[in-house]
Length: 278
View 1 (cartoon, rainbow, N blue to C red):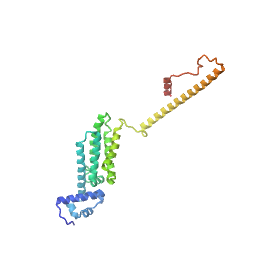
View 2 (cartoon, rainbow, N blue to C red):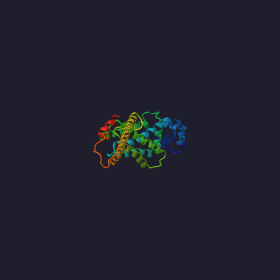
View 3 (cartoon, one colour):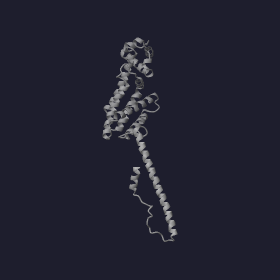
View 4 (spheres, rainbow, N blue to C red):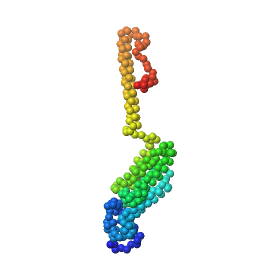
């Protein structure tokens, strides 16, 4: 079908380029050998000769993209910056650079249903990446004297945040790579900086419910204390008014300064202890 003469290597590379473009747009199962051959302007036997069929071409495309991404990330993990913030920024930018420069390949990996090689898939590669991130977080947590049991989960969160953000960006890159990286790092970095040693839910779950009940009881006690204080102040004001009337009736003679027995002063610490017993 084609008029130009290519070496076997050149033809193979051409078919890989065509296959990568088509597999980025369509699932391998729905794409026919005839469509691949038509796009490459070759006959079907050429595809069978080089790859044994569309499955073989697909496997080569996926393997090549996985290696390209893996090489970039492995180089980053082998030489990370000393600064934790710099490490996060460079790691995110390394991944986004792959997506930017290999957009079709990234879409192929996102579509990948590893029927030909279950061990060679994007999920497998991202699991490996998460293990690397976990090791970094584990060391960071130890330096900050934080529990390390959450490190694998936080690592997967950071990787997932990056990948899903990149997926949205790859389909519609309305902002620059650096701006997207700044968004991802902004959320991940400040989330990690403010991490609690013992994180907890505030509104859902058993612990949250128990805490809400304790807070409600404390608020009720505080309300009762305020009500008693207001009652005491009201009685004191009323008594001062009565004393003033008694002084006027006594024609200025006054009283002996003694107590009538009703105005008893309670030590504040004792009052607090009585409140806590309620």
